[in-house]
Amino acid sequence: MLGFYFSPFGRISRKDFWLKYVLVLIGLAIGAIIIDMVVFPGVRVGQDTGPLEGVVNVVSLWPQIALTTKRFHDRGMSGWWQLLFNIAIGAGGVFAYSAMLEAGVERGLPIPENLYLPLLVGGGMVLLFGLVELVILGFLPGTRGSNKYGDDPLAPGESAAEVFS
Image 1 (spheres, rainbow, N blue to C red):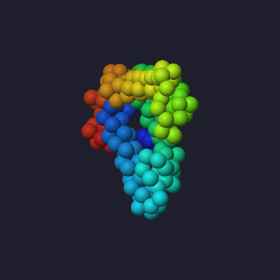
Image 2: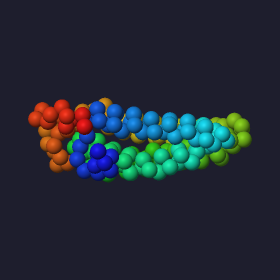
Image 3: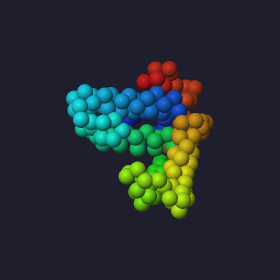
Image 4: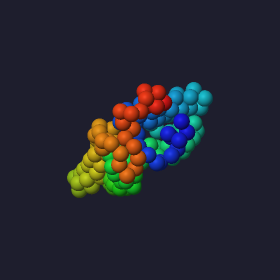
């Protein structure tokens, strides 16, 4: 099981992506937030990152990279594609956030018209690249049969115990 979460080699199916990666990550994040709120009452959800949530974020970084790489591999794409998506999403977020800071949004000031375009472009980049990556990883089927990254995780020759383990 450690190889599943920590090795970037091979392929995983959409089912494994959603059930063993996305749901597990969401569960860990929610659990960490709840524990942080109980143990550290000063932690405010959405405003502060509690200590346990921070540890979960750091510890889950490599499995996120490894499993996303495997999902790209299942599509016949290099795992380096995630770097392109993450740079574009990060750049859009920085662009939009810097425009909001310049506008003084954190002080409750209205957004001036000259900053609508930077906010729209930055937010649009985050939304567009995030959705495209989600569709590629979570909704499009993998290549049938073996590819240069490994055997098809849904090959009919595997037993049910191997598929669901």
